[in-house]
Image 1: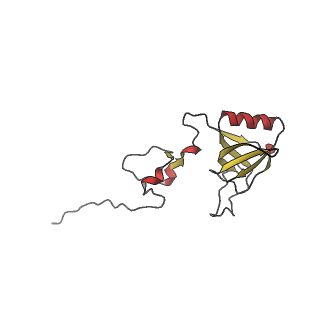
Image 2: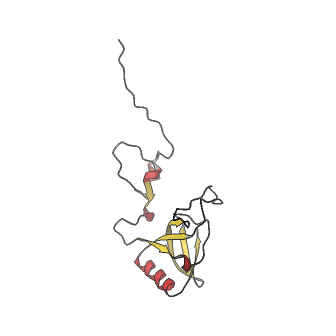
Image 3: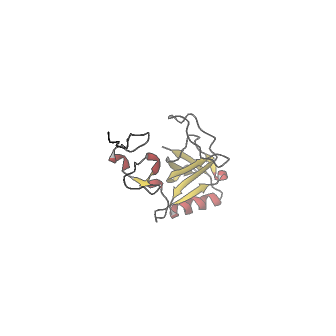
Length: 148
């Protein structure tokens, strides 16, 4: 009589972390159990987190404050915010959203296609940045956003 042995076949799947260096400057978005595979979808860049006990917040730029912004702006970009030709601050983009409040993403690697038109921009800012942007915007100032 032959013995039956159950073998757990492990195969690499798309998005799975295979090199520990891929974890540098990342934070977990969910609880992970010991021994389970780690996927890129489970992680976020540390500078995109707001709930780590620091003074980082999501700041929604009112549409009427914005004079110009690129339609290729995406989550994770560094936005440079200008008012009257002067750089006011720079901040990470938390979200870019369309009129239906859905995140706009690129449909290709060159950002030539998108899932919608950008109509809302949310930034990750600290207290000082939020206060500065609010004072200018509430005082009638407007902003131009660039990114790189």
